[in-house]
Length: 141
Image (cartoon, rainbow, N blue to C red; front, side, top):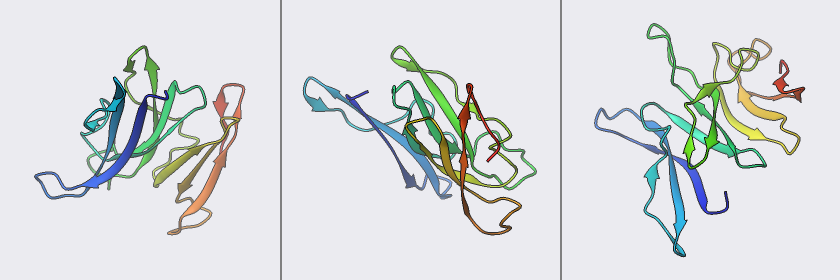
């Protein structure tokens, strides 16, 4: 919406481990509010917020939902606007998210999703991936 701004930044909470957090500011009575942690962020690292064109879906990367025995990796998630609130975060399909890192989502006008990832095609290196939005689902990158 035109009266909100979302962004992410690094911080060091009390445990001194770096964490990426998403923030929001709202325009109220012609003035911007004090930044607040986005309602779906703040527990684990979440960043790179990007809206779809309608403004009712927000994509981001997150380290949530990691197996405790694994090194936490970013995956692509989204939330959907429900009135003035947001849905619980939803992890995008396994065709996009793997056991490797995914980050930096960018949503094109046609809803194709571009993002950074580590894949079998480029072991140990980052690559730019694209997944097409076809009939309401995302294709394999």
